[in-house]
Length: 364
Image 1: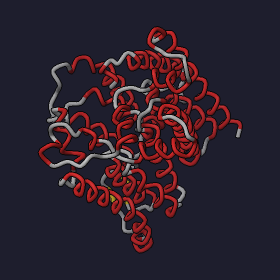
Image 2: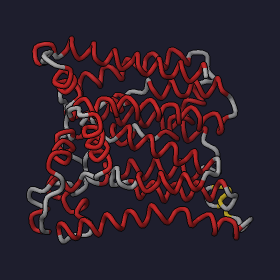
Image 3: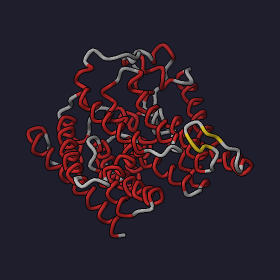
Image 4: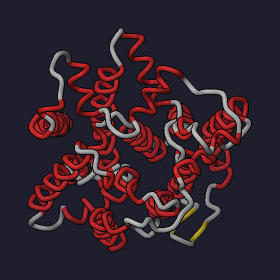
């Protein structure tokens, strides 16, 4: 309980620092007349306007031709705006207030989930506490406080992994359908979770080592992975009904010119990519050989923005990759200067948070 309270206090402290930094940086553009406007001036950034539109107007009817011209809204999945809308109606509050409350709840609950996962994975409460604090202080963890999907996705992803680890498959079957309704890579995460399930069952014992141990029980438990797949295809059917395109969320990417390759301004993303490369090198040197699922989650998640040329999205995509950071954090925990590394990391986070406040595209 003491560790969880410390995690809660640490997360809230950083969020207060965010507010202080925003007041200093954006002082002349912040309106203090009411809380909703004040908090919106700080955290209403980038894709938030799309979620606001979904909350207020829902998804529009369209057709395949228009999707590549203007209906960008179909790139955004429904769970996050649905949660915000529900909170607005239940408590009669504004979009900004609802999104702010949810960001606090979802991010802190996700951090607690990471701590619980580490407890089971490393069997060491002190190491688990350090890793969780390290995660909170990572360079791009400020996204979890924004009016965006990162904290929601992380929350569902971590607890889905935890459910499989503890063999709580019924709870998993309730969480995983929600996961595929948060972001386009949700269904990819379900595939990774299935690999993690096979590793837990002993059917995958290395990167290319397989076993048929306990195959009957494994097949029966695999049925719990059907709900997220059915949910995903049901949503695709809804997109077809509304737009005439089963995969409208992919088609609309063309409207942003996402066709792959390196962007012409690739150089501005070199520092975030270098930071992630350092983390990945430490990860590769320390990951267990039987964690194919962890490695594929990292590689496939980062491949999405790289393959479409949207390098500005790499910090956002990378911040939910908790397996990368728990393995890295475990390695850092062994060295004497671990708290110095955490301190440097949190100052880098504040630097990128300031860029995010100023709407620099490098952290879009």
